[in-house]
Length: 254
Image (cartoon, rainbow, N blue to C red):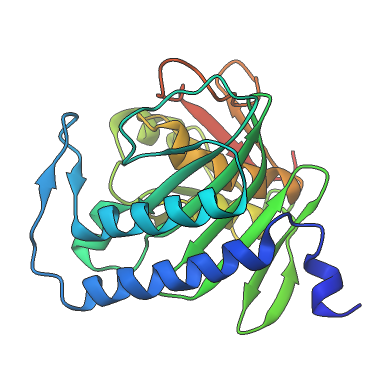
């Protein structure tokens, strides 16, 4: 099967992958010449020139390829009544960007009837693209090679991935219940992608996140056979009037 056949069931692949390349180039330009000019939003989260530039490029791209509304972390409005819409984090991992550790991503998800059905996660530094969704499988694309993603059975020791910037007391308490474990740390949607590609077994997120932080990578995890569920065991749902997610656990095969 050639590359085009492997990717043709991912809607808008050519347009979005091209958009991600263009956006990534702009982000890297700012990253390499980063002058620490940071502003702060109402919730005290940091905002850089890269967040804003990425938002405008992706917003323009998505509006040119479909009529679906676009909700972005940098949008003025965070809610739509549309049954189908784009949900975007133009720079997931702004703190990682500021710290220059490379662990930031661009996230684009298509939400249908309140669930993510298609996700694109791109790492500008590694130049890796993850794409997938429930019922359509998930892949990683690197240097023109396509790797099919599949979550793994729990290892011994179990590999727990946690946030590099938000390793709080609740998360540490969760981790401590596993006597035999290996702790991995990463930033942004990289953590969910590590579940999707089988390099980690479980990711507990017991700290605040917003819908745009998780939607694209949730689609990829689910396409690879994993789950993203709240603490009541329910699949994460979207299009809430409150954009914040409940705490959740990401797992590979159980």
